[in-house]
Length: 335
Image (cartoon, rainbow, N blue to C red; front, side, top):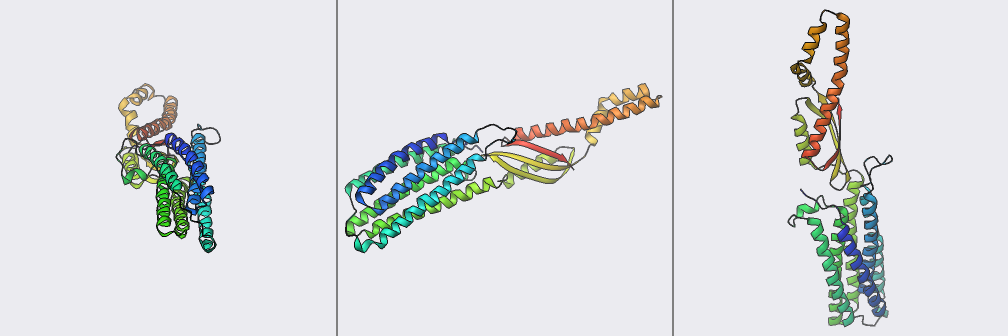
């Protein structure tokens, strides 16, 4: 399965869109005093901050492997995505819910109606901008595949974060518009505060989803069960591999894995390969009457065997990488 792994286009688009939306929402929130508009402005500010963090993660994750990190810096994207998710939870959800509850408790002393046609206009503009960035993120997420539930399973957490954040943004705008409509109909600001609370809860739910997703990668996400079984079956097809006593896998980047396996080795096929080549027979016929030379031949043959085993393991590793492109590092140890 093909997976989009870059995330740059969707993150940059979302960053630009949310910067613009944050500014216009904040201005209206200050002018109107609306709790739901304050929630939306904080929501967009949190998204803008988080997408800045995602860009940092993308840039740092592309650094090549070095002496300190032999398998590269791919995990960095998951770390910064996790920080981003925590920002959504504490800055977005926390501040929004707190402010909205505070506004709700002060409703009796607040008789100013926060409804404004200009607020509705700004929310409509925000809906269009965030809808466009959502479509860009979804397009990048699915790549050339059809939109389905499966593409979210192993999706790049960076691109997935943008999809989730923009989805929550679009839903948040609809909630804020609903709150404005109910205020207009009932002339009651309580719906404005409730709208802000709902937006905060949406952000909280989103943050938990992203934290779980990135946590799985940071602690060491393994290959799915189906792929693991396919690799084990592929290994067992080799005549030198009698059994797999241990198999481990871990993600080192999005859709890039390292596998480690311990195998029970059968060297007979390699010995037969030496015999079929006829080299030993010819050498033996030349020195069979000279014990000293025969002893040297045995030492020479013994020295050839580890090199043959090493070459055969290298060949197996190469075949695994060719058959399973997501495997970039293979470590095979003989039991």
